[in-house]
Image (cartoon, rainbow, N blue to C red; front, side):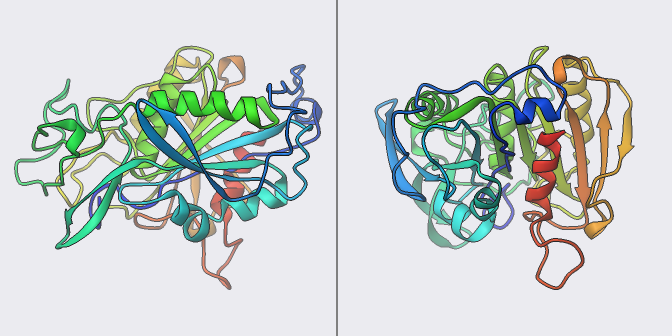
Length: 351
């Protein structure tokens, strides 16, 4: 959360764009781009603009970034990028992910939804506590018992939740419904390719993105939970023919450990390998994970495995790199590209 909770800006996956039909041809698919209802209606308005959407009696906010050549008539991929615990859409775009710059290079649309929040004391100071309701972080105890240890760090209880249990800490608003409504709105107002709607999230955002892949698997082509999986006992996977999955975590992450061990703040999350295995099972992939080379293998000790031979074009991959709880990019002058994580996401969805 703050310094220990599944925290920080969450966010977003990179999406590939080609001319209509080129993407499908590149992959040997017969499927053409499916234009949304917003094609031809508008040029989209200003880029990186804060917009609002009324949902559930609340005025929800989100930021939209359009590539420079967005013309309102060519269907573009959409990437939803979700910030983490105590994070914001603005910080995610301007200081954290580098996704808008990557989107400008590749021609896709990035939308940064903003979660709800409230003022509370956290880590000794008053702050705006923001979070996403992944439908698991306020459900302890669950099928596998409590999701935190008896001596776990407490976190502020969102006022809309009423009373929170000792392991419960995230929003109780209908965030899944909000995202579904947001997708409807974006499809009606922007020219998007409905076959290439994707999402990425970091930390609490990653947990929420995993849940979105299960709940909205019929709409999202792929999801990428980074540095965050659902609480122990609450992992999920979409039905057959659902969305593809790319997991990515740091080997030294003690905020949301990738192996499911006790986090430094006393919480427990589903191991990355278990999430990938369950996902592979519902998508008809091989049960065994096989090492796979990527253009960035070895960069910051990046290593990936995949569950192959999935049905219906789905893909399941899990990657790790040498880092703590951080967004996958390197400082200038370090081996490899500074935004190798965004490029890895692009590469995964291109495949």
